[in-house]
Amino acid sequence: MKPALPPAFLDALRQLDSCAVSNAIERFKLRLRNEGVADATIRCCFPHFSPMVGYAVTARIRCSNPPPASESYIDRTDWWEEIQQIPAPRVFVIQDIDERPGLGAILGEVHASILKALGCTGAITNGAVRDLPAIEAARFHLFAGNVAVSHAYAHFVDFGGKVEIGGVKIQPGDLLHGDRHGFLLVPHSIAADVPALAAKMKEQEHRIIALCHSPGFSPAKLREAVEGYLSVATETQETQTRNHDES
Image 1 (cartoon, rainbow, N blue to C red):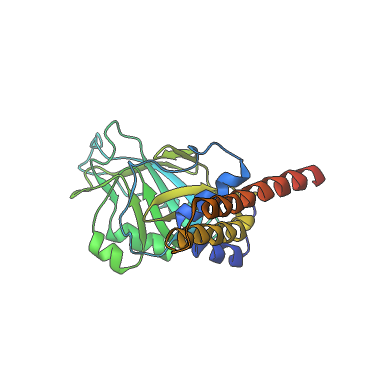
Image 2 (cartoon, one colour):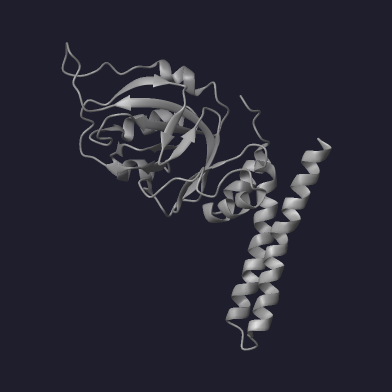
């Protein structure tokens, strides 16, 4: 398990939107740009919430088939202990492994309340969620593949393993960031450096935008502003290379 980051770094990440976090991560060239970011199958249920930041707690569920000997599955409680093995703040990440994910919803008002009491700030699933007004009022983040009326035969299969949600492979303890744009995985090795770089990039972006609205706009000035923006990326790559050489 990777060590938890100081709260100040998590607070700094929480001040950034996910697009700014993604832009900064790209500059470190630790992964391909189409990796570590959720695809359009996962949507943010409460886009007006501030960004979510937390460490992943993982589980897998099924919803489609009834149990062989009763009307419903007995709700397991061993996942309560599993959650507490991961440092707070936590994000519960649930992969629905049914052939048709999202037929039923395991995440409703009750489970959201339990998760929040156990130190989770939100949950992510490729399956379904329900009871949205109550969960919204509790200020609990939700990212999901769809919404559903019923929980059907939703039940936990296992906990603590690798899951995949929206094309993102997630391990327990991975650092996640999400907002109205979706969610992404923040590499632990650069997480502390992302806020400062994102701030520099935002500053350069604002210069370009301000120039585009300025009466003094010209292609030559725009080219100069864009070169300034690109230089931030070059400086970052050089610093990262130097740090790796020294370590």
